[in-house]
Amino acid sequence: MTAKGYLGSPHSIKVQIAQLQESKRYFQERAASTTVPVDRIKVRSHAIADQVGAGAVKMYTLDEEISRLYSVLWRREDNIWKMINHMRNVDYMKVLFKVYVQGKTIKQASQEMGRSYNYTLEVHKEALAAFEKKYSSFLQGQKKAE
Image 1 (tube, rainbow, N blue to C red):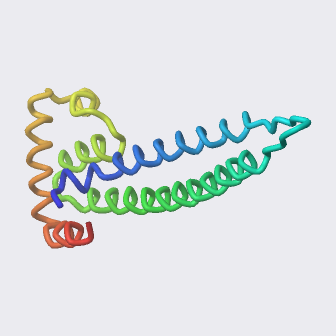
Image 2 (cartoon, helix red, strand yellow; image 1 turned 180 degrees about the vertical axis):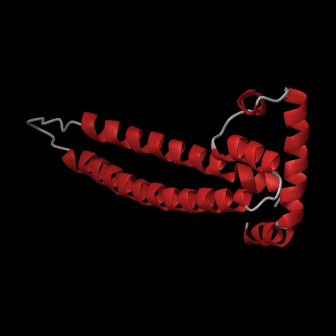
């Protein structure tokens, strides 16, 4: 795994969580809007009851997966924060923190750091290279874990 891939992985996890939450809302809305039609001649509530039950099971499964992903996210963000704080160059630390922990663009990071965009872009490239060099064995282990 590359440094950029590892540092950007919390964003991917957040996207997965958002998609699961959206799916959960869909099942909640379906369960809330399901009605059981009562007909004097035919009562077919079992199909609808199965649908509601299946939706409830799906929501429970989604809740478990969301919780698991939040746990992964928090551990990953904590680890990334610690790794960034062990970099020797302060500008590297600042730009990596702003871009990968705070989720800011390089342009926003440059403005907050009081530096030009081109300088910050160059520091970002150097910081990624330094991060990859410093944590190469760790990143290789992450690649195998995928």
